[in-house]
Picture (tube, rainbow, N blue to C red):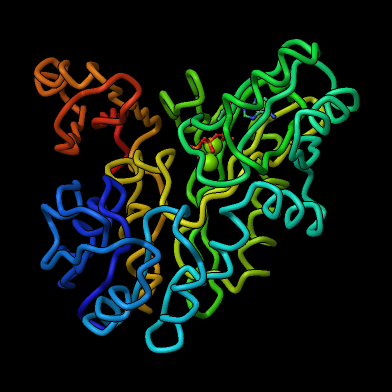
Length: 355
Ligand code: ATP
Ligand code: MG
Ligand code: MG
């Protein structure tokens, strides 16, 4: 098809639309407002709520295939739309990934080890779960969280503290996770096409600050690389079991006991931004190729080392310095106000180019 529908209008949608436009496609973007980074590069913008079945149908009728840039959209209307137009990745991937409990059970069923977890729906259940998982643990909303939002570290077991944390999280359903003692964090970035071909990019080592990805480095260190195989196999089991089409990212903790599954993202991922300049084919282009039924491109590195640094909040103001350096690639998303904790852009640095 020649028109691609993208649900969501953030920077991921923007980068997908740029890749798609280069390949000759037109992108229609659907989001609740018309002022996101993706709208700027879209051929057409649709405004509607993510659960507005009628508006979504109108949108679906205007495109040949639909994809999405984030997992916190209701799956039910997409399942409906998928009867008329292809939706990739399959809506079932959304179902699994948008609820931390479903996601962890799904991984466990595939013999992939998540952090120890307990579903929790009251302060009392929280205190029991804490007894099993120990202090500190992390309490997370089951749905909607991202960039470390909607989660809190539980450091004390007193009833008053638990009641306070529970009301601060202000959700009915949560999950308590044991604190994983990891050495490093990494992600597996994979793409699977309609025929089932599965490719991965080199594994980035990811560093988070306050729950937000700060930077990614490729290649990862030896500690991570020793567990890469197991993590890639786990990722392929997830992708195959979902009959997945598109880019899939799975976050892992690298521990002394091997890789521990953190979460999956059924979409292009921040830890793959380095692939725009650092790989022969970027995650965005391969995602578009996969959902449009084109052959996948090589994921080989273009440099011996690639570093991606997120520009968070006021860090985006360093753009001038970045532009003056060789082999530094600046991306600014055009989001307006540089609020603290907001991802405003990123910079990728290539060290020792190969091609
Ligand atoms: P994203 O933006 O990646 O979707 P998120 O809001 O879904 O983020 P998580 O990936 O669950 O958040 O957690 C954010 C970060 O917090 C992790 O990358 C890790 O650094 C830390 N963290 C989360 N859960 C645990 C855990 N069980 N043990 C140790 N650290 C954790
Ligand atoms: Mg997440
Ligand atoms: Mg995460």
